[in-house]
Amino acid sequence: MSRARRFLVIGAAVAASLSLAACQPAPEAGDEASDAEICARMVTNSGGLEDRSFNQSSWEGLQLAEDEYGIEAEALVSTGETDLAPNVQQAVDSGCELVVTVGWELAEATAEQAAAHPDTAFAIVDESVEADNVKPVVFDTAQAAFLAGYLAAGVSKTGVVATFGGGNQPPVTLFMDGFVDGVAAYNAAHGAQVRALGWDKAAQDGAFTGDFEDINKGKVLTEGFIDQGADVILPVAGQVGEGAAAAAVEREGVSVIWVDSDGYDTLPAEYRPVLLTSVLKNTQQAMVEIVGDVVDDAFANEPYIGTLENGGVEIAPYHDLEALVPAELDAEVEALRQQIISGELVVESPSAPRAR
Image (cartoon, rainbow, N blue to C red):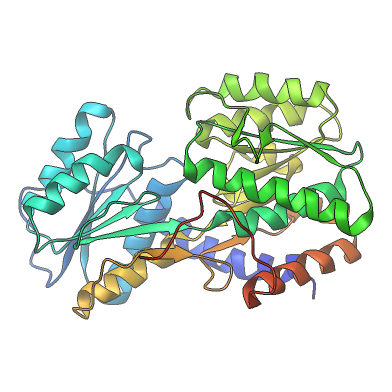
């Protein structure tokens, strides 16, 4: 069975269980915790609870932890910047043992509340805060993006691929570093000259839309890449990436690599025909592990770093575009995956998360 088919079976089972959780509305957080022995509060960033990214996956993970450990979890949804600090304050005031915050927007409020409440356990997703009672949940996405870049170079018919980000910040550029390195590895292995537009790893600079919400910016930028010959695009820009998918649908022979979640499951179905794969961050798994540590009184501030080895990052199945991936290329991607896991191949980036 190919790597793509193996993960299709596993991914379908996980998606089925998580879709039930995702369909449930988040309860409104009260001032006091419930009668559950352990409780958790999660504060979203301004992207909202159903953002097809970290807010959604972190909440799904806490719902899974509710089932596994019998805790009680609630989500406080931030609709704008002014909600962030008050929501963290409300989460702390609930008296819950664990407060989860999502994204860089909440770093300052998390640090302030953690300092004021040293007996409360905090976890912050996709950001690092230095404190004895804060556990960063971060992901070495360069590992999985390396595989995606190698794959993109291997399926490209034009010899041109591209990537862009929402902003020049480490959680974004980490994907881009891995992607262009994967393209370079394919070129070295095959004597090819596939070009990667949109990112210069040496200069740590490239193409950015400047935000993570304006879908039209993603479409316009992607159309520019397609006009330069790119036929595989990796957007690392949250909701802006949907613009890349919209552009790909309108242009024959162009495919997209999604990030964070499996775009085949989370994006509108109209984009499925152009989704080659996704670079995944398994936030659900991290949330379950952290809740387990809190329940077992084993919480520590050592970062959770998602890797290929621990299943925290991965690439998704090829779904409808599996026929584009020759068996030989799929085997090469799987061999590289094993080399990264074993340590034989090290994917490097200045943005890679580090253990304390």
